Amino acid sequence: MGVRLSKRLADFEEIHYPFTLFIYINYVGSGGKSMSWDQLAEMRDAGVDIESHTIRLQPEIAGRARGSDGRRGHQERRAALGIDGWLHKEIIGSKEVLENKLASK
Image (cartoon, rainbow, N blue to C red; front, side, top):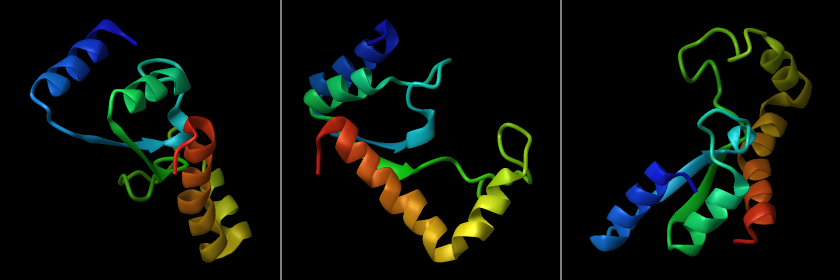
């Protein structure tokens, strides 16, 4: 775990302040400042509540017309799955990945 993250976690532990992280599954371990599965497991073991948000941040929710990579592929994927299939994948699918990776329920 990075020094800054370790310090922040220690600060929360010191004051006994519980908190929850909501995770976009596709960004875990993607580089840059993203957290790894090992870091999330360490935080879970320290008492942090780790929950899934969705598979990825949805561009239309974030006020962007395109995905973070500049493509419009998310619209075609959503259309192919239908709204119910897309929501199931984004919400239930992300929860299943999180439970599998962190062995939590």
